[in-house]
Image (tube, rainbow, N blue to C red; front, side):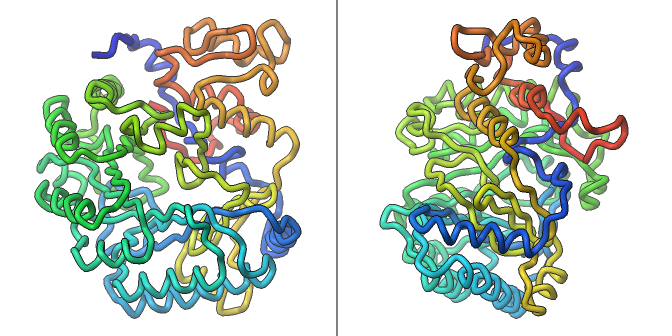
Length: 453
């Protein structure tokens, strides 16, 4: 069991709204004008970096029903013709991008996210992969991963995905308790999840991930203990255990959540500590903020070898210098710029119908951005802050980190700050102390972020 004791006073002090730092600067602070022309400039720069490989993300936003807890950019439909028309637009976007970058760019990693990617038919998956393979050169060792809803998973589907080269699948589970499932609007019996996982093993997927969420309405220590026990019986290679972000002002579907049924901050922290104890006590390694992996899994190996990376796709093992994102709301990282597509399906499609890149916003990183980005990556992946990236103790500019030393979240070593066992639970707060953009916000004007605990 964990020996880390976090006092209510410390918990209250650090339980504040803050970013999850899948980028730095974070999306709400991309302020400078940035549109299609700026993205074309980034793509032209990438075209000049002919030997740089890329990662590719495709956002597939469709869901048959929107769950109460969901915070993703989704479109609710079950119509295959709607999906087909969306794929038409993704193909147009692919043509616009590769028309500048060129065909045959080497790809190290492909991820399909959503929404519910496996709402696509087998034929639509085949079409999408063919579209990508015709324009990119996938490395023989390229990782192909896909997110999936166990309720839609069939043998035909997993066989088709495996034949298309996908090695990793991530199943959204969230919780196994019937009361919790009812409270979040996602009825998903354990047997359904187990069947999906078993099918994936039978067709020899190399990696199976399950997503859990703590802090959901009606979750209790007893119910979550049962969920953790059930998750362990599935023997996943990786587990992501995310904190529920209740932001009904940004996600109106969350207004269906009974706020009175949400765990208190103390109860929520206890749930996550239970997850840490459960997975590490059964041989998993705690990765970064909220991931767990078997010691032989690539994620755990990368963490030990200090090759772990974090980007818009989360924790990853095969970072490329650039990330090309396609589909509505997709966020890319290209030649020193961040770029986000229009986050509404209809608008995304209309812009492409006009022959333009569907850019909503972006940001060109400054030298200071690059330095702080490296520092925050080191924090999130390696649990340390080297002094060549942040000011060491004693320097005037280290004043924002000193309170974290005094409060026991980080400790000063000869060449770096190191995250303490208590600080492990507050990585986002430590990153916020480095964030040069957060102090710019006036009280009451800060963008909508989830709470850090």
